[in-house]
Length: 109
Length: 117
Image 1: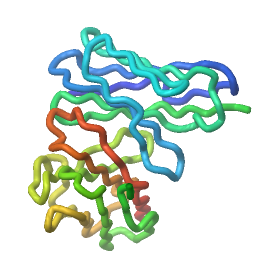
Image 2: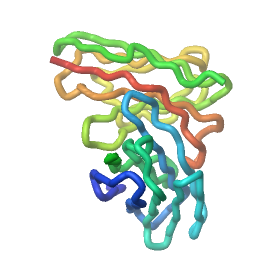
Image 3: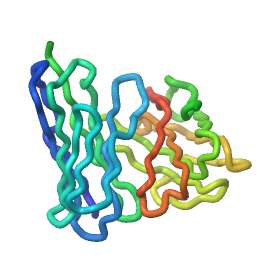
Image 4: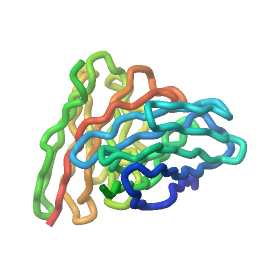
């Protein structure tokens, strides 16, 4: 059974601090790795879709790296702001998307 | 550009009752997905449509769940009869391409939260 693990499950971070979390996935038959942000009462929105080993993507204060050989991706948030509070989901594709359970990030003012 | 529309946002029913959820994807998106997201778990794919054909429904509990996408545009997901364990958020998503190899970005609706009492 293919499994996608995200850690930590939840995270409290002080406003202004930087943080990162992990998505682990099977290292075989890799096609893509997705990151989504899901704010309460809103729809999940895509942050990044990465397909190449060594990929690094950035959107504002958020960036992500990808290591397909060892099966992990990191998501970094620099200078956390209250609006970053959300659940961050990753999904691995070996043809179909398999989702992790998410990391719930809470920014403390 | 209008996003993915879903309704209703919230629904409370008693077990053994039926419920239907509706989704209208982004115009021009060929692929439509229905996911079930139970609290504390990742989204689970129930069914994937490519236009009005089914690509994957391997995890759809077909004894109680049904879905259709007539004319390859909007879609309806039905549960009949509902069980307590069906309490979840039902997410609809769409993507432009065929979703080949899972490399295309998904666009989600706000979800329909179902509570079964």
